[in-house]
Structure formats: structure tokens, C-alpha cells
Image 1 (tube, rainbow, N blue to C red):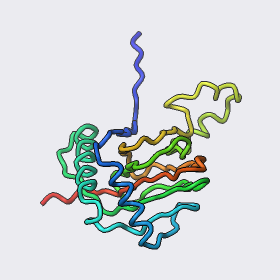
Image 2: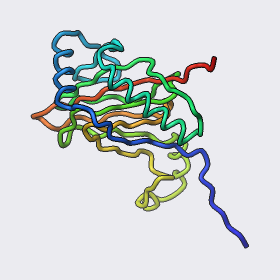
Image 3: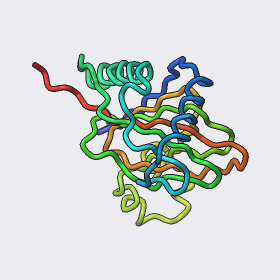
Image 4: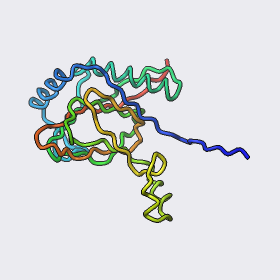
Amino acid sequence: MNTKFLDIFPIKVMNKELGMDIPQLEKQCLDYMRNNIGRIVTNRGGYQTNELPKEEFPELIEKVEQTCSEYMKEIFKADVNIKVSNYWMNVNNYRDYNLKHNHPETLLTVVYYIKTPVDSGDLVLANNPMVHWWGHPYTRESWWSLGWYNSPELFFQPREDTILIFPGWVDHHVEPNLNSDEHRISIAFNTYAPTPQ
């Protein structure tokens, strides 16, 4: 007899280094933070900008759009030029974190890491809530072998100059920065696919 296992509805996360000038970006972010009032959305503590003007980081936006277009070509076999709709900066100091959330009406969610000292907080992607129900009838011991199919969460340790891309509907949160000496800096992006002309 022939047996097959099929992966249905997989979620792809893209991880890539961009080759940006990290010291310059860090300086630019800190200068912006000193001169602009922040907001509170999902951040608990720390600093989050309002939506940044496109002219603030034009080279970074261009690289994000190119990389998102690569994602679409690889995953969906679609030749489309993805555009950034809006973006903002996060600076998490000691014990600052971000609550679980997603990005409604966003094709792809993007996070770019500028400064990521040791113990500054992982990005945590949540599995479909039904995975908890799926494991419910079993004993606790069955959860000792967690993997891609039954883990409620997956952890991504951020690395400087690295971009992470995933679908906008995926719930995610940021763990607290437990580094008491250094802050963590990231920039988040929402994206869309322009309507074909």
C-alpha cells in the first residue's frame, strides 16, 4: 500500500541579511527618537514612533520592497512589486516588550533588526489557536516532542541586519529585553501588492 503525508497550508518565513550600514542606521534611529514623541500601541515600555515618513529610510524601504517581492516570487510564483504601506521604529529598553498582535489588511509583515544585543527578546510567532485543542485529549507527556506541527509558538532570535518576513495575519509578540545594559532596535513594515494596471 502507498502511504503519503501532505503538508497543507504551510506558512513560510523568510530570513535574510540586507547588508545595510548598521552603525549609521542605529545613529539615525536614536537621533529620530530624541527629536520625536512616540506612541503606545502593542509596546509595553520602550519607544515606538508614529508612522515614519518614507524619506526617512529610503534605501531600507527599497531593500524591503525588493526582498518582499522575492518572497512573493518564491512562495506564490507571482511576479509582483510589493510596496511598503507604512512603517515604524521600536526601541525596547530593559524589560520592555510587545503584546501579541497581528497586522490586519497587510499582505506581508516585515521586521528589520538594527540592534540586537544578547537577551534582548525573541520574536515569537504563534501557531493556529486550534493546535491547543488538537493536543488537548493527550497526556502532558505527548507535548514533550514538540515540532513544526504541534508547537503553539516558534521563537526567532533576532540578528542585526536581518529581515524577517511572514504573512500579516500571523499572531506574534516580542519577549522582554532582559539585557539591562543595551536597548534593542527594530523597524516594522506593513506591505501591499499594487493593483495591476
